[in-house]
Length: 149
Image (cartoon, rainbow, N blue to C red; front, side, top):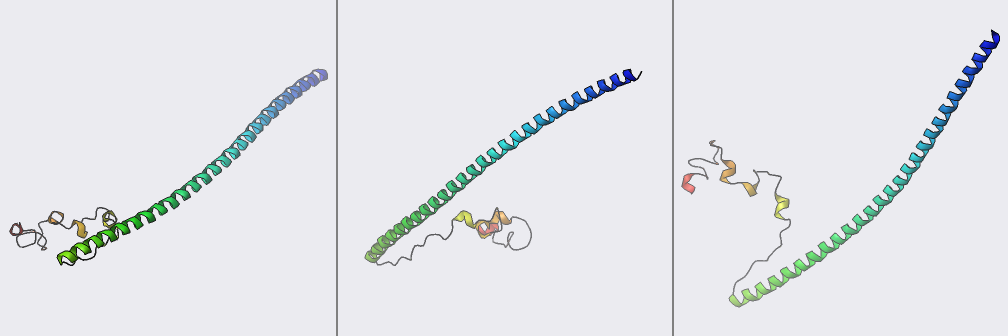
């Protein structure tokens, strides 16, 4: 009877040992796989960092080029304005007129418009104030009346 129990115990031990070895092999495979994945991620990160650095350099160069072109454009514009002023002055001197100076706009029109702000001076029209209220901006005696048409 002891021999039987010993044989059963040895069989269980062999089975458990085999299962443990299999589990250990699977764990080692997972560790190797994760190590490879970590290494690949590190390499991808290095590539990503290098690409980001390259893109930052390109962006910097483009900004410098844009600034250079902007300065060149501004210079050419000022030269053209000076030519036009000189031509107008010579024309006005011959005709006896005095022409006021020509100044380029400080900012483009688009920069002065507030995102759809209908109350701004640019958009203050009768249609923008069409409200039938007696507040002086529309009606019989207001600036938008039929008498004004």
